[in-house]
Image (cartoon, rainbow, N blue to C red; front, side, top):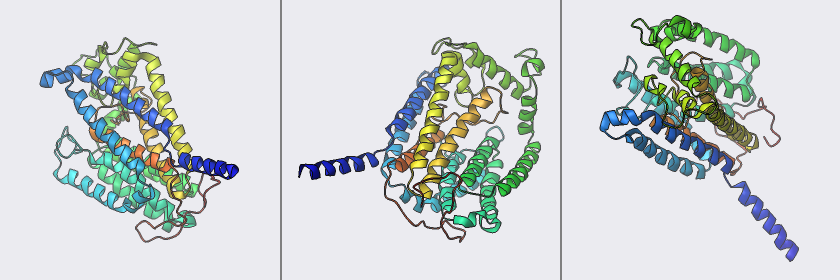
Length: 409
């Protein structure tokens, strides 16, 4: 009896551990969010005072979004992740409708239509999660047919092309590049044909470059990236300064001012002259005030997030969970890498926020929703041996994924 009781206890403990979310991932995300709140306050207290007389104006707004996002993350974590699969088509359709609405009725700000309901919601941010969820559902239902051009590449290219086209029209090239990179990576790990992917990359890259050439502001950013900003600009206050070149130069100056240890929280002076210091360039402010040590700490946190995310994907019990967890991890990791690369002048300026850290409600909440889904996969809930088909009328199950998995059916 004692032996039987011991065995029951071991089994119960294993089942309990199996249904626990990845608490290490939770700690990583909470740490990033807290750093974000600190940096948002540091980069906006002067703006908040100028706007409302309250230095904490933007901090309070961001804190409300944080509370909302964490609540939604906790809720989504508790929902069995296969249930989200049932809503992937609806989620994608609603997102496409929102993208159409913002183009037709959205308010133009600096020549771009990206927001609805004032400055609160960006449909392109919602599209990141909707795309990952739908593509995970679609890819996991294709099986070996994924390698066939008419069943795999063509419908996939049409779907992603429509989404990317709507976002380009806003225009928002940064989000477009992120979505294309994330979707392409998911297509790769799901087992797509390498030759097809290479051809798609060449065709898609050439098309994107042609589109960039037709948008003056996007082309100017490429030109600014190709030049040495310190050689082009003799003075940061000159009347003939190109805005994009100035932004690149001043971002580098702000980032480098902090040295190893930084000038101290709230003590940075360069941020007052830095465009988008609270959003796209917040990593530069972090570098000025917390120095190289602070920057490395944030980069390591994102590296840890990527490690935990891919670990969750590899432990998923079916192809949908594997591709979903991989897609969410790729999206958040790519976005963080692109933001840091832009601030360090490794990539042309794109305007993508740093996940969990930059000011912005819709970006923060959607990122936390993605983490909630990732945590749901980590709980190791019920295994589905068959998978429902996504739309477009293709049936079948996923065959061999690019990444081998001992538990995959």
